[in-house]
Image (cartoon, rainbow, N blue to C red):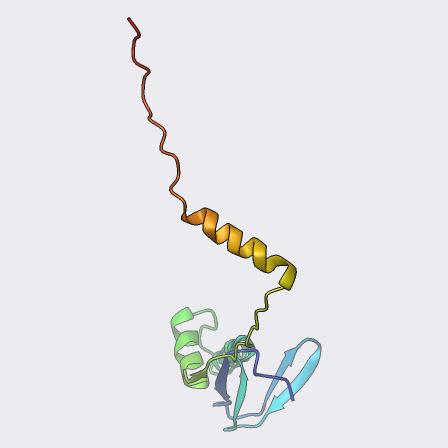
Length: 124
């Protein structure tokens, strides 16, 4: 089974009358009729698009009709998503740079020198 924690996960339901055979990365996967499986969003949307086109072709409808494809993919995907887990990033301060960090913070607090702009005045 693929590791889904790093991806946004969405349900994919085979709404066809036949088992669906999806292919990704040279590997085939069979999803039985009526079965719902959790897939990474990109893979579920890929499978849904091709399943919708398969259903439209068999029904002898226009397989390039984006409205019909969207209607079927919405049914296939169900639009229930689980967000991806983001790994916790730990920060650490390297001892030799602690003093440098403090100096940088202190220098940033000083007021910047304001230079007058514009045309110089005539000296008489």
